[in-house]
Image (cartoon, rainbow, N blue to C red; front, side, top):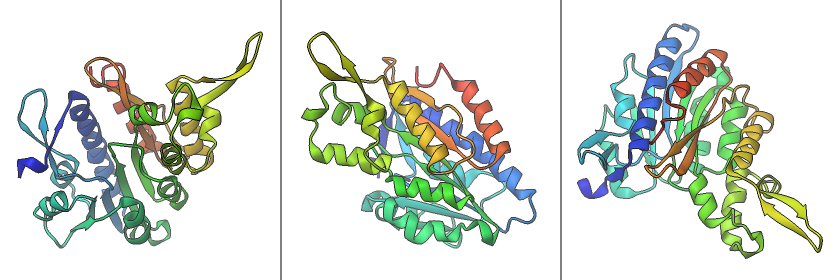
Length: 275
């Protein structure tokens, strides 16, 4: 089944460790809150459950396997995967009584099937990983998680995909379908104002591409002001071996304790992630 496994760089291994470190602390804290009746682990882009390390060539556990290894256990595990072969591989992980594998688009599955099982008013909580390889998920998923108040998220903002396909120096040359992908991710077309500034020289007015940091800061602001997350620490830039940022790892929560833990973990890796 190795043909279904991704070969991943060192930055992905670091990300997996960050997620595992947080999930361990999260599970322990929620276990001690006796009024909480149900704690779910949600992986919107679960993959095949394992990867191959580019650095060592060895098989390494993916986020689903790591989540299943954590003690105390979560009440239920929701793994969402679009690819049929990878979803089938996930079926063999864990006990089917507390693991549900969904083959489909997380933008539909999370909203229709998973998030309704994580309602705040039902004393339920969830930790949700949104770890795509491209600009995803749709903003509606993120905003719903924030407004539900019961769901904490880790989210990858795939800035490399955005730069390659959308955030060009000349915005007029961007294909409409690529711009639409960004709009779905962002929630509206206000991403354009974050990505470009209006400049003027002696002869004309023109648009200048803003740096990545400005775009990411604007998205962080949306997580707070539009999605309604109370705590969104500065995201962690994840770099490849050449030092280029592949994506920014965001954490968003309503909980001050969770925020404190995430900031501590991010601080440990800040400046070193992926190098």
